Length: 400
Image (cartoon, rainbow, N blue to C red; front, side, top):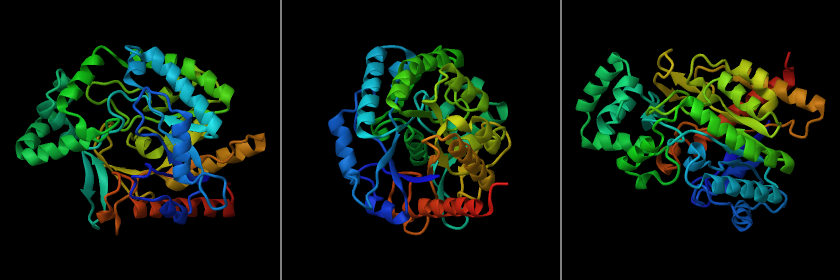
């Protein structure tokens, strides 16, 4: 398991020096400043490599995973400039291959990349985490956004609780809820207004799971053969959370959906980012078993955990310590190591799967550092140490 760390660029409050001291072996980053749909040029890619210090010198970290090379809404909808955007995506892949970056993570979630209702939920010990509250989200959808048809998506019980929650919130609380939800939008969420969300939802009107899946397949048919020829590994991130939101379809939430995506273009370059935290938000996802069955095409791992507050699909949850949630992280790492052993026996060059400690609790100095939501220094360092310990122990005692 190759230990990596997500870095948001020179503006990140967690520096490359910090990451090196954490013991990470590679960097996960992206050109966040390049507008979605435009080509990542060789000059911008090389500039980011130089920011990392990726010059082959001893002790320097390498850029090993792109997260993410975003897919535009035009591509997801097959509208507007979608054909040009696909050509630009292929050009970006070629430029990344020239730069030696082989693993490219992306997602196919419409409108929102991820969704939380609270970015600083307080835990009993004083730590903070991100949380998704179903009632808060329903209050946003029904009474703040006032989306057409929203009342059809919630049970009477949730809608009633949301109405009460809406009445309890003052203007400041409502603004905080909106800001938290919009933080999951691609780009600078602070510049996005509710009317922008309404317009985005309008353009997806009539797009159901079948249509979105068809557009996804068309995208894969274009870009996967290019990635295969270049020796790249594309890996789609699951939906977060893995349930429909805002009336939008979800097509990467379950093993069945992931298998359909892999079978749509059955080439090794077409793979998965296996995010344990996203998938664990659904109680019907058996993560170790999914790794055993899908492992051949897992190109990147996000290891984190959640505590589900209900066993209902679509229920509330909060992000936990890496070993403190509903998932069996030991069994998950054991399944990963089994897959790596199979790859090594088959002589695969990608036998060591890159992983990163995904998210983390704000603890100690993280509470005042002001890092990107979900990406504290010490909380992730703690998670990395715990995951490293599991892998080391299993390696010592064997997998049987």
